[in-house]
Length: 406
Image (cartoon, rainbow, N blue to C red; front, top):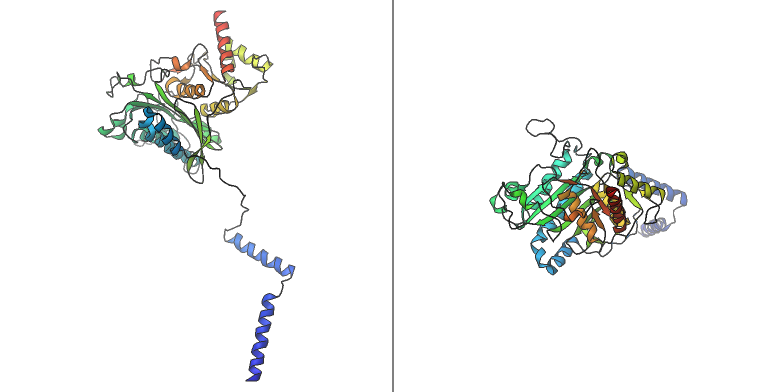
């Protein structure tokens, strides 16, 4: 028994020594290498985590709650604006999945499998255009009773919300909404910025929901508080929702972790002048003499702003306007010989953008007058468009005036 006890004590002592014995650097390295190899083979490779902290930013929903409480005339639009934010998040996800989910290319007719005909703009509809159009239609019409009718860039005529939703309960409302569901959709093939543009108009008393005179609800100036909301959502390196309710401009960035828009840009103000000019100069020879002279002045440094010009053109109205809004300058889509009225649509492109930039301290003109003062005569009416810093837009107006008088 004594021998067994001594043997047991010796073994215990040996075990304790081995457990506490320091491992040689060589054996330690082998052990770490084996552990790393095991993690790699199981797909659990460790990545260094950056030490970042989240800013304390106000959610979009809370911003709307406060603003609509302060402005009683906007309270009916709170659920509409929340729904627009949700729609933008859906479109953002679809844009990111376009390649993996086979959403590139021309749209097909569900019944025949053939490509759809050109839309009212004379453009071949893309798959993404059709999907995003449906998202915006249902988001605007299905969020409550505020919106009576909608007009889309993708559809020839406006539609009552009762028609969109298939239910007569949606036929009333004091507002009408306009939108371009996916501006610059062809940019997606090259992973370039695209966006959604929207505006909400107060429905005039004479407007009704009947199909015969539905257009009357939309054919109104953007001024005189007729256009009560203007906004866009940019899908790019970050997803940014920019909005004006008629008292300044604010921006909200989508947090990919939380899945919510956060108030990152408070009271956006566009610089009084800027060096950036955003024109499609491939059309230079088709521009009017006044526009050509203005652009030449920018390039030669004789602009009244005194700034060295910088050309930036993305090919997406949302992307180009956002760049101008943040950095200053001027965006232009002038009249050309082939498009004497320009290419941008007044109701759902030029007017919402004009409202945003004016509320930020800028200006928006056709070259001959304020965009928001134009009385449209048809839903898809086009206008020459110059939007940006107030000094830049004023200068191009002066060029138009001088060459028109000459």
